[in-house]
Image 1 (cartoon, helix red, strand yellow):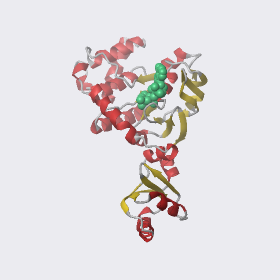
Image 2 (image 1 turned 45 degrees about the horizontal axis):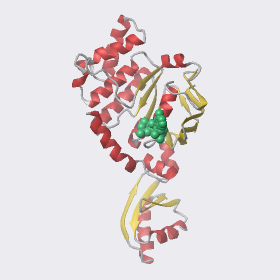
Image 3 (image 1 turned 30 degrees about the vertical axis):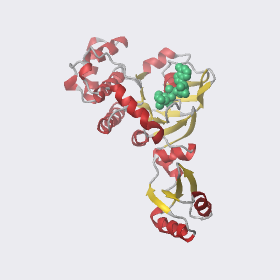
Image 4 (image 1 turned 90 degrees about the horizontal axis):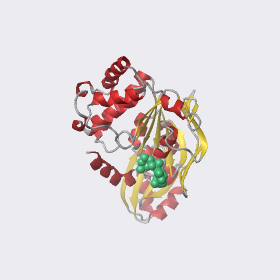
Amino acid sequence: MSIIETNNLTKKFNGLVAVNNVNFEVEEGEIFGFLGPNGAGKTTTIKMLITLLRPTSGTARVAGFDIVKERNRVRECIGVVFQEPALDTELTGRENLDFHARMYGLSRVEREKRIVDVLQLVDLTDKADVLVKNYSGGMKRRLEIARGLMHYPKVLFLDEPTLGLDAQTRNAIWRYIKRLNKEEGTTIFLTTHYMEEADYLSDRAAIIDHGRLLVVDKPEGLKNRVGKDLINLKCSNMGNLKKILEKEEWVENVKIVDSSLLLSVKHGEEKIPHIIEIAQSTGIKITSIDLHKPTLDDVFLYYTGRRIREQETERTIAARFRRH
Ligand SMILES: Nc1ncnc2c1ncn2[C@@H]1O[C@H](COP(=O)(O)OP(=O)(O)OP(=O)(O)O)[C@@H](O)[C@H]1O
Ligand SMILES: [Mg+2]
């Protein structure tokens, strides 16, 4: 059964189409990744699904309820962790959780029991009574996830759950996300611009750019679309080599990207010597060559002609400073 379903979901801000006729379905129990660069429309999509923003046109249902006509029913079924941290740092972890659960009307007995469970799920039991202002960035993120789970939501929305966190903390958060999906059966909708994150966590991932949903599939399926092996090379006279290689039947695709030639082939390791020979015989000098298996970044490149990675570096660093 689909637990999220959108139908031409669209949001315009004045002249800007932030989310453009987006259609997708999320199955109950899956981890669904929404991958896209800065400004792609990820947060805007989440805000519509969690009923904070009204679509300009189109519809969506979450847990069977219409996001406009049945806002309160939707809200009862969902947990949310926002992109910007939102904890009361003058309270302890336990107090933050308790406050949230009161707003959802859980009884004292229910709250106490649930707090024990969710703290355990994110390994914060021994920090429960520490003030949040003394938590690390990763601990705050884990507490926010725990808080999103307090009222037993069917769907948990995570907007960039590991933005600005270091690699080790990010790995820990990934483990908790997988764990709560498995142990509680919670459906998870997460946005990210980290392709490794989308790749590792998602049962299925959607790629979004400039408000448009480009493709949805399992990460393996997405990568298979790009080809088996990718060869990236730099050389003199790139346009010429491209023309020559395009004619070879074993070359599935060849593009110039970021002043490199990117080839999609099978059995790449056998093709490298062959490419070098071709280049030498036509007087083209290869200065570097590498072979790799496709990543979701390559998938993004394949669909948009741009990379996610380079666009994001500066912003990620800025976000890290903001968080601490
Ligand atoms: N309230 C608003 N008013 C006007 N424009 C907005 C508003 N919210 C978002 N936008 C614009 O809509 C587009 C999509 O923004 P959104 O925040 O959804 O992107 P995102 O994919 O979440 O990006 P990021 O990775 O930076 O979080 C951007 O061009 C943004 O500037
Ligand atoms: Mg965002």
